[in-house]
Image (cartoon, rainbow, N blue to C red; front, side):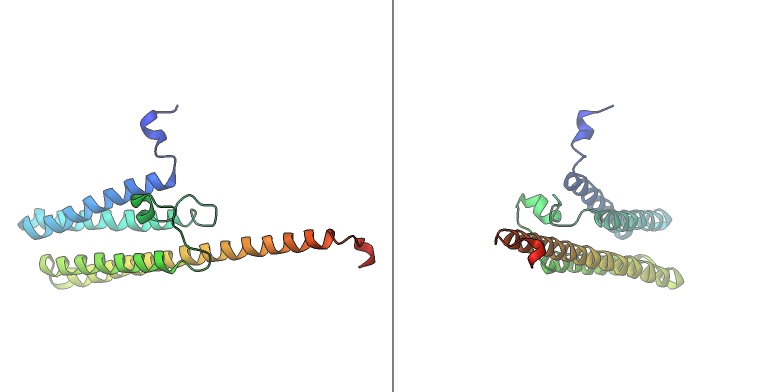
Length: 179
């Protein structure tokens, strides 16, 4: 059963934009609920929305591991938003990894600063560990994505070199048995 509005989600880049949009809305609402909603409702809303955002972030990061490589149509949310074809030129994708680290640092700082305003005591300590764990897992997965893309590019280049060497050796007219 194919539904027209769901067919647009078949591409990973479109799904990624939707998930990023949901994460932005959930995180912004977590910060707003934590800072401006008083009492237990604000506390519970902050923690629930922050946990929801963290779960989406980790799940999407792991899902992204399968969408790297020289033939992947997805090259990061920035390239999807700006509709550029720019990717890395082979090797380690330092630009994408750097943007991910900057994003992780910014989101972690905002989450910790908001947590410091909303939470206290042992609950704040637990929040610091949880937010730090999500940041570390996301950074590790981002590194693996960049490293996987570099490995795929190196493997593709070595296959091209082997095929090119074999074709040039076959075209020299000397039978393979005489070499």
